[in-house]
Length: 443
Image (tube, rainbow, N blue to C red; front, side, top):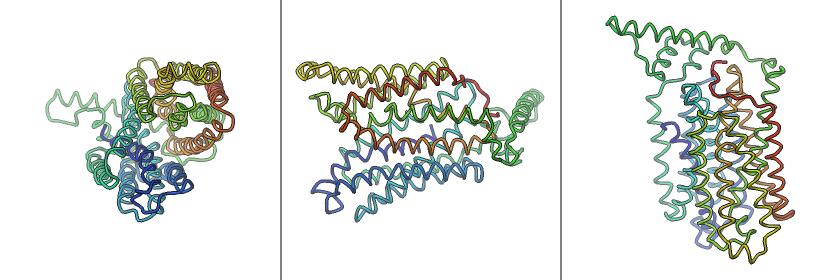
């Protein structure tokens, strides 16, 4: 929960955009002249380019300066983002700020999942890792509400405190034992292992000594497991270009394209537009908040269920359910008359809430933990960085093609494509994705 202060702050940065763009594009814009459509599109999309750079930069830094130092650095671009929003004189301040917010968010998606996976016990790793998307969703909802009801200049003054609180809070945390062992710092690694396992260090009494002996044996076993994974050896091209690793990256690529081209992110960015296409007369902002709450509920279900049912069951159930929900949206548009939809205005909202819940249970919540558990320990940092960079690129692609497809090809064709991607992912991942629940993080 301490490290996810930064994840929540990133969600706030994302949620700030939608209500604030309406203000910045109006005659009452705090920047003076209202933003043009082109400027607004750059303000929106630069966070994606920043995220891509953050994925790569922090992926390269993770094994060089450590997880904890990277966490300190994560807070700085986000802090500068809120300062730039407050001091903005023209749109270039927002361009720079959004890029920095993206860089911080890209780092969050690389650094924090690895940190949490390395310190968590196997029995709770799935739950703790899937919390990342829960905090992002919470942050987006809170950011949307705050930006809607607080003044433009008040919100940055409040939120800028969060990255500062985060930096102070992580002072008491130790570097992960895996990183310390990788760099030959065995004594620190042992203390870190005891800290995160809540084991007692050496003491004077016989009973405590015996307890420590058991703890020391546990650490020695852990140390042998970590070092046997080759983490102290230099990474070479052979570590990436071998059949098992190529298969893993192939599965990760399928997971990423199905995650994004199934619409798990894009659909919820264009919720208001989908409701308009279905003739929904309810307030679009209210519907968006309801769908956001449904998404949050789905992620909470994932947190509770992931270590009980496993990753495969939740992911495949989520993909199947999401595909059926998107098929239902397409059929609503094709088969139902405008009069029927007007009389039953609740129906599109119910279907969208179903899609939000079922997508969040697996497709949205589990992508980070599955990627990290699939990758070998030796190349986990670089592999996660490459995977998240690919993920960011597909977010950009999905956000670009979805509005164009809805406008040019129509909502039904877009939903059929999304449903087809769910079917593709269900078949491929159902056949080849192994269960990673309980898998050791030392190999």
